[in-house]
Length: 534
Ligand code: GDP
Image (cartoon, rainbow, N blue to C red; front, side, top):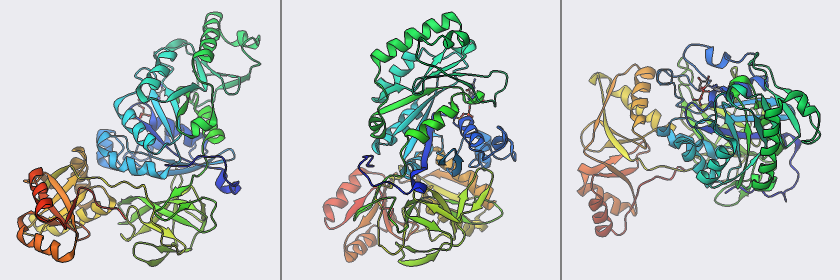
């Protein structure tokens, strides 16, 4: 749980201006379009459409794979940093498809807030709900953007009701739509008493903004047709009676979400939303570790790896570990302690992910996401510090629920397959088990589509066609306990034992009954469905 209390020392200005957040949505609600407009207004790209158009293979920075192009889904998360006014935004991209929830969950451990994008005609959809629940587990503050208001959308009260009922969170309108579909002309900005008028002729133009002195201001009638104005006044009156007012603390606690209405493709409502994140959103929050809480303003640098991505650039076989800085002021070249291996690590070429390209990070502050190229030393959950043996908590590990055998299409290339699999295991994209008897590998994932993603990546990145086939096993359990006892157990159950990519022993089976029996016959052993990440 994050602590959003206000009774904190004032943050150094560089930290206080940072906003680290993710966008969650159901596929097609408009996340990519919104991201693009963020980058446009953040000055990170010059023209909308650039992110998508640049190089046929990518839709956004993170969409670099064939699979993503084919299916139009975003598989891997990346981070983008840009300035907006006085603020530094770190937008962490979450993969959109339901089968990639593992990655998504971990991504959400690196942010302080989330924007929930919903389609004005469709309301709360399945994937929105799932992601929302993850945000709630962490009490993340959520800003809502109701998109596609330029099309026929649902009634405004209905949309708000649906969010309140479906997600059990209070909703307060930050803006109110005027007209709908073809008649949509813009929004009344409730938080700032302004009229925002959409420019239909130019999609990239920011709305005209008119200062309004309350609902009886005659200026309203100059810009809003009489029928729409009457409806607006009525609805705002009703909203004031029926819906809670904006309360920053409730928002920071995650119990109230402000909602903005807009049209990402028309650049409408986007700046208001960005102002909302800047002005009301949380600065970098306290992070938890096993021994203590880490405050962002602490002098010494700490951070944790929440994602590892390999082959970001097919020309360079590098791996990038994405690190969320939890505290301090990081400078390039710093020597940090890699807590798991107890080894120092000189971070000489960290990267910041600016939208246009990767850039060397000369410095970074608590709240920032930096990428550290490495050859596999950095794993998900790892801590980097200036010497303290910290262990961050809260990075979830997932039980592999689906197991399949994997075979190289070309048996001569089995070694390549092993290399590819080990890489994905390190990325946290899959669990890989090597049975101690026989050959081949068993791969464990959380969602079925992950097998396809893996097959596609192995072919693309290693030029190796592979086949996934059903396995005789359906469950995997990590074995821990006294060494002698583990060895004894392994020896009599060889046909069921495999090693994971760290060499740790795993018991494979298809029957819960087997697991119960082991627990009965070997009381000193512990069988667990997940493995500690750290
Ligand atoms: P994502 O799957 O959530 O990333 O959604 P995209 O940003 O790719 O958008 C899905 C589709 O909706 C695309 O065809 C967009 O052009 C379209 N779209 C996005 N925003 C708007 C909007 O404000 N109005 C309308 N009419 N279409 C939009």
